[in-house]
Image (tube, rainbow, N blue to C red):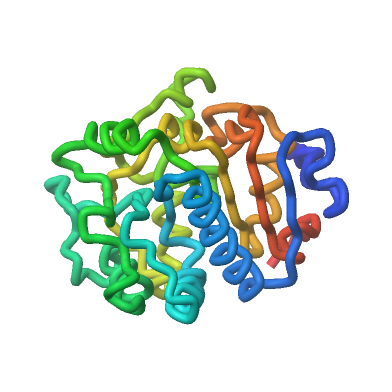
Length: 282
């Protein structure tokens, strides 16, 4: 049996966002991705303030290097974000569907404390009630908060190995779901795919056994409902993923492809991600 490589894998960097509605930026490397993301978050916060309301953002943990940069920017400017609401995309769960403990080395809540909230001058940091993580015991609360705040100003995030955003995993191959139905999925609890657990195990030296099987995630409904989206790719393996997202079919099998159904989508990739993937037989 001969495997046919998808044509989109051959697309050059300068053609990567052609014939799409996506605004693409190419920067040098991981540090520039982090700087770009920190700057973009602050710009959205400032834009919302200029319109007379505190920003409401959906934010990821990964990519991971932007938060210390953003904290330094805010501290240097003595810029308060006390009323800004940051809704984290997701969190790992225990086997009985409760948040992993905040002291767990993989806890996204713990990471946000260590790398952002604890680095901010306390007078500038978001109020505790504005530091939100989806609660597995009350998944409807996220949309209720969003409605109370008048919507999400912007969603920031990365893109996973199978095209997932947040922990919105594609349906299993033996399941079918239209793109339209998938786009309406709300905040929920779900199983993580083997692909996601495998690639996430890179953060712990490849020890997949300690990656949880369960997670709670903000849904596609909330992500696609944001007034603008900003997504970042800084890993070499994302050179294939970004091509599938931008030039493959719009399908629930690649959740990030649904971003192409929105108008104000911004993607920023490192130079090596923009280059077509190399086939290495080793």
